[in-house]
Length: 321
Image (tube, rainbow, N blue to C red; front, side, top):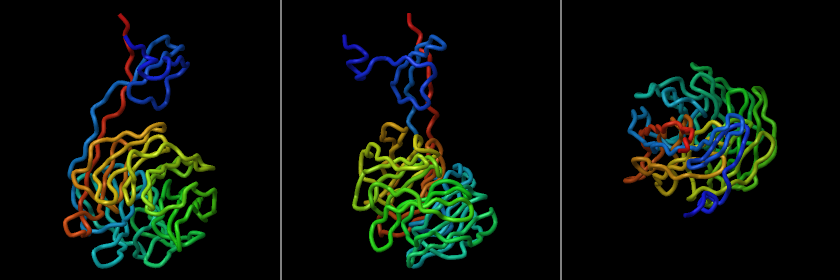
């Protein structure tokens, strides 16, 4: 009979406290409670059709970690022009709110449905930053470097603007303190059309163009290359709350694939109902929405919204008989 070490490649670990982010099938012995524990298998998450946007668009942005029932999206590109449209999701339908002051696509975003930040974008390389108070957008201080296809993480007062494109792929990384942007340490790999989520001190980015599965983790000071995703992620949507809790979905060319990152490994999950690219996402690893983008046939901007729900992981005590 095979031993646990032969199957898993490690002995059962003895720890004083339970691991903060165990993976499915992991077993450990808690020396404080003198109990053997394991991470149980859970039912897989799934996507379901949600309410449609009022304005079909792609290359739009969402407000970071807004919950599935309070998602904010803004900006984007219709089939004909860049727009400043802002819409709020209540878990079943979208409501149009006041527009961005500057219509644009490919911008970055952070925050929640009542306190958000939108920055960068195109057409033209834009440095414009706007702050959302739940009712109106107000222009605040610009990015240090104008660019588009920028990744946003964090809150309205503490945000990270990563990568972006301006006359070539950018590794540039800027930190917002509620008043000004300051350049901080760059990404390790220059690319555009990547996606990411998290906070200004704990974030993940993945994928990009040239097509890559490369992923990096931010700890508030530096980017560290982590395990690559299972497949390239270009022009994908994402959601997540930290560099150990992240979900990525969709992407070019019209992908439906969904993967999650738990801080140590990528796991393939159930696909979107329809393959899509240049979509955006808001929410968390367990409760998220995929919004907009474009998909075949016709390569037209879409109003589609899909809702992701996944049960929380369960740690179980193992009874030995």
